[in-house]
Amino acid sequence: MTKTTEELLTPVNCNWCTGCGNFGIWTAFKKAAVEKGWDNHNTALVAGIGCHGHILNFLNLSSFEGLHGRAIPVASGIKLANHKLNVFVFTGDGDCLSEGGNHFIHAARRNQNITVILHDNAIYGLTTGQTSPRSPKGFVSKSTPFGNIEEPLNPIQLAMAAGATFVARAYEGDIEHLKEIVIRANAHRGFAVIDVLQPCVTFNKLYTHIFYQENIYKLGREHDASKKPAALQKAMEWGLKKIPVGVIYESKAPSYEEQIPLLKSGSLVSNKIKKRDLTKLFSKYV
Image 1 (cartoon, rainbow, N blue to C red):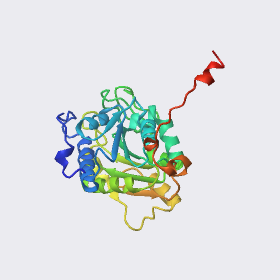
Image 2 (cartoon, rainbow, N blue to C red; image 1 turned 45 degrees about the vertical axis):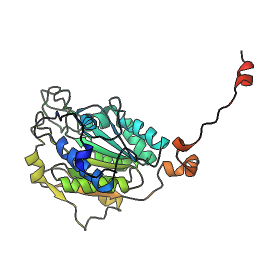
Image 3 (tube, helix red, strand yellow; image 1 turned 180 degrees about the vertical axis):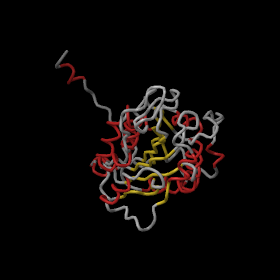
Image 4 (cartoon, one colour; image 1 turned 30 degrees about the vertical axis):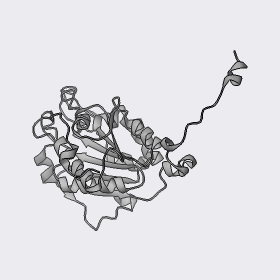
């Protein structure tokens, strides 16, 4: 069982840019892992391609880096093979909402019991600053020098519409708040999404640390996360002084894994493999 954050370190030094929002996500996750005892016996991590994906190099936990946009189906397979594991997906807004958009939607629709931590910096950072599906309209980048003509996707709204049963937003600069949301998301039985507002200090000069610190607000007790219409209204809020963070929506529904009869008797990895002689079967066709 993980007892200290130092146990989660690897020999690899962090190579994120100084001030990158990934540091806050990394720190919050380590704190959550220590508090809940997530280790190589009970936890698996999956990441896609992007700056976010380097987090696997800095966490001493069982992990797998998938192809661009394919982190969620890999995580889904891991969860099906051993549904007793805590399975986390680290993915970027480009990785998840562009290349991986279809996987995101269908995993939410199925209510698969995995936790998706979306590193949302509204830009393609690893490929040096192109417009992503989260970049605002009018955003000037290397790929949109005259301004982005497309409307940005809203991952919170999309997740809820697709069927996710736990949807939250957090700012990576508030590490304790993010840690608590990660713990709560993992405890939820079903598809959990955390949209983490994470500045790219090198290429996104709009959504900065100062921008978020000045414009986010925490949802209070007056917000009933079980009411979907009200939650959708909160999901649509964005702008000056009105970006909500916290658990936006949570509901109870059977997870995908709970509905598979074969898993009721135990994990697939615990099933003994039976050898069968197929000689007679093949002899009919040879």
